[in-house]
Length: 303
Image (tube, rainbow, N blue to C red; front, side, top):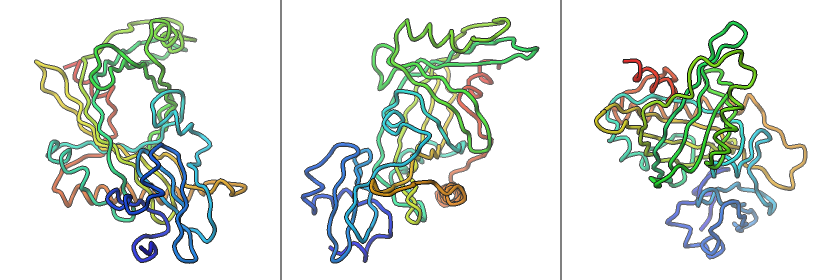
């Protein structure tokens, strides 16, 4: 097989073709590397969430995911503290149809990996504080991962800003000690606790998430679609496509690695527009209010 006749500079080897390359089919763990020959060129591959992403090169090289602001392992496996950068598209029609078709969507200019499905119970808690003559609301969420019987994790976010939200996320294993630490951290510096921690309605979230790569620049994103449903007897649902920047494919041998912010902003905008165009093609209606789940739950709770 000659890659250059099929693929661009960056891409994903389709899973049905991985079996054609014994070097790839024998390696399955995240972050592993493999280099394939293609005439005088090389196809440098890295495993990302079970998918083989690649960069074509004139010399054999190992790849890694570069992002100085994020611990990539923590981010993908949902433990630790990291910077989250994401754009939200609220879906307002054909919600289940989009969930079924999500693996088949076509994103122009990007190569797509296979999606991972998760399902969880989530319970948000809010704390209303008085600080420096301001009323501030902070929150954390207790997560039951994959419908487990008990809580697994605690998550909280701070510093939301911009059309593309940028927040610092911390996720820790659930324990009474970590719950107390979380509360103490969130109320630190407050003049007065006005309310809370108070729970909001529990919801079930089912989510599909796929990694994608910009074929030109090599930027890696997580594109996901989630349906959050309040538990019975409520019938409210909240559905979003989320576009989250993860990293850039880079060679381990490369020196003075940096990310060109203009290229990244161009790539991000290109991905957002490509996904919107795909939603239009599928006749799925959406809006761009950038509503977060805490805003949805709070507005519902106040009805």
